Image (cartoon, rainbow, N blue to C red; front, side):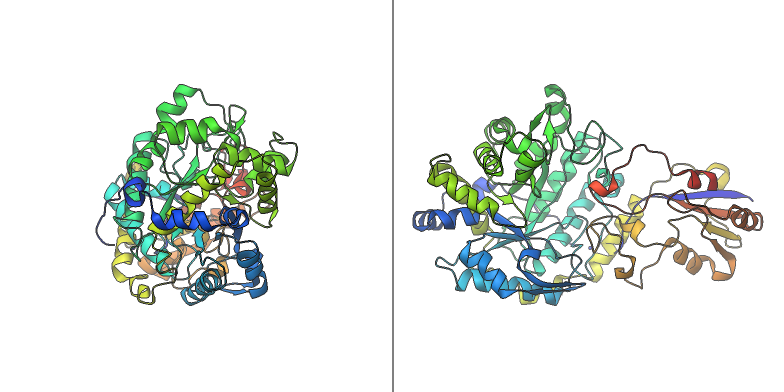
Length: 536
């Protein structure tokens, strides 16, 4: 066998116009008469409803692949009865553009036509590497791969496309970028970051924010960005997701705070909080992190939203609150403006009671709701909360596809080329083997069509796996495929691979992990399974 080429990693699937600059929320918003007028007329219940965010499942009747059907009774219970101001998520998998526009239109119809004050809902979603929850969207390389390009303008241009394709569905709020520094390689969200370097994360994060938001958030091709997960989330001591970090204050400020400071300077509209704790202090309960540093030092004036179920976690996991009610009080007084609850009305019920009992002042509620209404105002939702019918012309364009191909090419990182294995000879007999050789999911990663990105049956049939691409380039007759080692430790046919390798000039060995996202990706060490090591 003349050579060995090992392929591992996580790349793109399918991008874009010129760069734009953002302006600060302070300049965009100011003191708005509409916001103050609404606040003066809102009841306590209406205000607390604005601070409540539910997942789409709560108001859905059916969550079939690519098609969500709303339950109008549940939707009215959320928006009319409980005054809910925000909904998030996709319902399980990416939905078609038509379905998204139908869902958003129905939600906004109820919010603007069936409630006393007609306040629109702000819908949020995780468009992490493109509008990954819309069928057919342009899917770029993940952020870690974009960082590998070293091309800030490329990040900016890809962000423009992501914003336009997300807003085309009628969704004006994107829970991205991830601005944590990847300083613990065990952490299962490393690939969502721009890497370990504070400078790269800062300049790429700021470029991403500016391009998402543009000069006018009411532009039907722009969205409100959300810097996350503030602060210190990305370096848990154990490497496990949503577990404590221990970071000296100097290191926290010199490294981990910098990307968030850059995003604030770029005018980021919203901020999502770290799900865990720093030095024993849960960030969702910390005035020091959420007010003293974020607002007083960095000057952030936007909306702070919790992460998934994390106010409850102050009670259920961190145990710093004795009850769920106390957890709500702690988080709101610490500076959380909106709770990603996400499944029930517990936050709403407790907070209404806390204000009535005098444990949370109305001034704090007004402060939070003012920020929420301001974001809705600058997004233009009061004027037009509906999907733009013309937006489909900006969706999955040929230029976007060209940009995505450029990003994929620039993201590829060649570590070694010993013995001149590359480029491959046109006459080479090629063996392709390994668990990632014939899967699309591993080339795209989490946040692709589904949360975990692991539904191979939902990936577009016209896209190529590594095996399919090599067969197309080299000719099927020149390529032998033997699956070889699995992802796990189960038995495999060593002799079949050895025999095929003896007949080949070069082996393309495709190694790596199955796709994952967040806690399901927790690992204990960085070693590949023994089966994959044995394969090599």
